[in-house]
Length: 327
Ligand code: ADP
Image (tube, rainbow, N blue to C red; front, side):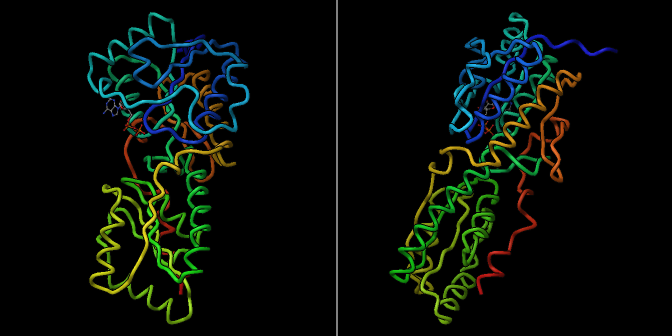
């Protein structure tokens, strides 16, 4: 059967925002416009979808945004979208507006919502992975990861200056509730002495041995990178335990939402742009559901259902490198 010709699409950003989402929006809009497709931006993710908050976009509406963090369409968490009746309302609004397909830029939660819309109401959907955590199944990369890592590295470089001057141990907590991807990459790139993964029971003996060994060989600072895990702020407990049981004094620095902001780094501009383009091209080529992913350095359209779970695979093979090199 010949694929239905796509005439009108809509795009939204959903869940946690990430640097590079604007690059993806720009690319979606301009690829669509360049192919004679009408494109609507939906404000505030699924909230705007069920409240009919659409605006038509053109090439100029996405001018001068490639370098801006956040998302010009804004984002939201929308608990109502978990209810089928509201997804039905969304599908009806899309149909009433003559929209042939929806592009969702967001994390695994946003992809779950998109999968439901496709499965229950046959709305054609393409997902573009946008989250700083790099924690989506089926893709090696999510837009925003590189910028978040870069922000954390720059912060740690600054902390090193003060840590070294005062011979201190620092626990630096980075984001990633269910994934240690940020922590692993930041640990390697900042020359950390140790990385505490999100699910780890902390091996205090190992941590204290690492710090002491460093001091013995003349190191004047130690940086321990902590993945926040399910308990943001866990570094305070770890610091207390290190002090009370192992006589190691440490300072805590929680980087928090600073990792979400800032001008997107090169990789996020690159993947935002190329993924946005492939999302529209996939629809033109007749795809009716999919997620744009990176696998083995190739960008491709994969089944959406493979990509709507959290996964800690992206940096797994690099776990342990920071420790190996901090002798
Ligand atoms: P992210 O997309 O960054 O993972 P969330 O997990 O908060 O962020 O999901 C974003 C939004 O996607 C939610 O607020 C909700 O509207 C929608 N969503 C998440 N999970 C589901 C689900 N199981 N069914 C339908 N919609 C969902």
